[in-house]
Image 1 (cartoon, rainbow, N blue to C red):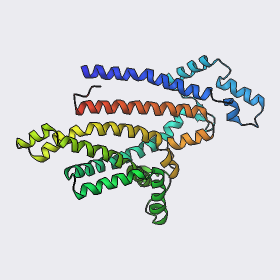
Image 2 (image 1 turned 135 degrees about the vertical axis):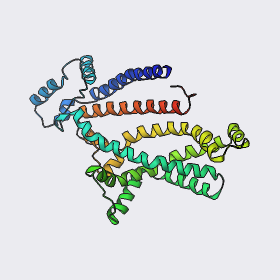
Image 3 (image 1 turned 30 degrees about the vertical axis):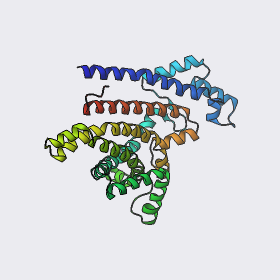
Image 4 (image 1 turned 90 degrees about the horizontal axis):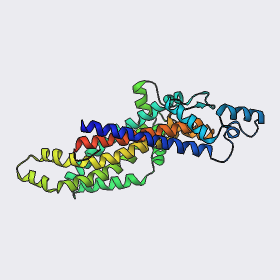
Length: 312
């Protein structure tokens, strides 16, 4: 019951955070230089057309009245209307969100097992040649920008060898796996070194802890001792880093999505910024923020479940 009470309290605390983010995104759009209606219609639009659009968007109302109208619509699930795409923003985001979520899940499915395997292998062989090779690979992997990895993999495995598609999302689950393989692998090659260095260092530190040495001296099997005491206690710092990286991937997938022409929300954000579609920009900002705080809460819950000493 105490856990549920704290969880509810954390969920309630998300509300003022989201209200603050909605206010900031609203002000950034409405206080930016230029007339939003004029920016949407272009310099060649007539004054009558601009005035009509201003009235349609409620821009003639006071700033406070505009925000409370916007906030009320948000609470009703209305993120506005896209003039560029001629459809509600919420429907537009639902259309572009699945490819991004599939890509992020794909990256996690590759990164987590690979990180665990390499980190455990390096820690169990600390100081030996295999540890040195893994450390060198991790450092080398961190030096390559994700866009460079994406371009090189697209050129070699997609264009020259023709093994995988270099653009699109595909049809059906198998089609998604095939089309997003190169984007997922190129992103995972950037993510794994970051997670690997963190987990390896924590594993080595835990292996020298007193309770691990005590378990070993009592005759506890090495594998059991490692999994129960070393690995489980090492997961929390890496889990926190993974949560940060996951939130970054959702918002930062734009680079890979652009390179591989994946119709995700990163591509939608770039298109909306270039097309000055302010309703979509605000809507995506709210969705990004909601996903980020949700991931943060999920990581905290998982950390407390792994180690009850970690408080929500």
